[in-house]
Image (cartoon, rainbow, N blue to C red):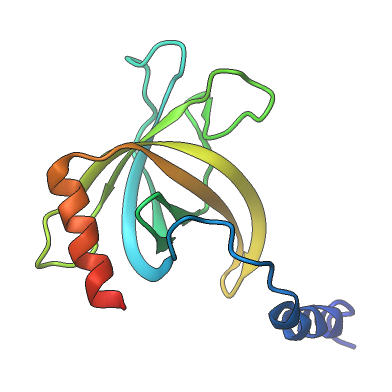
Length: 148
C-alpha cells in the first residue's frame, strides 16, 4: 500500500519553494556541510559541561549558524529551554575547510526544531555567536568570501 503521508510530504516540499518568507537576517546564509563538535554549558554553573556532541553545519553567516544533530540533550543539559531566562551556551568547534584554522566559539541557541530529512528525524538548531575572536572572524569572512 505504501506510506499514506508520502504524497502529502511530496506536495508540501513542492509548495515550500513558493512560500519562502522574506529573509529577516542581517547577513545572508551560506550553505555548508562541515562537521561540528559541541558541548552544552550550564547557564547557572559554566564549569558543568556535557560530553562532546556531534552534528553538521547546515548553513552559516556572520551572525551564527544552523546545526543539524541527532541529540539536543546530554548529561542532564538541554540546548534550549524557551521558558528559562538563563540560556545554556554551546562551546562549538568547527573546521570549515582543511586550509582554514578550526573555529572555537561560544554561542547561544535561539531556536530548535525536530525535522525530517533524507536520513530520518534530526534536530535543527539556530545558533548565534556570543563573541568571535578576531582570528575566528577572519576565518569566517575568508570562508564566506569564497562562497559568493
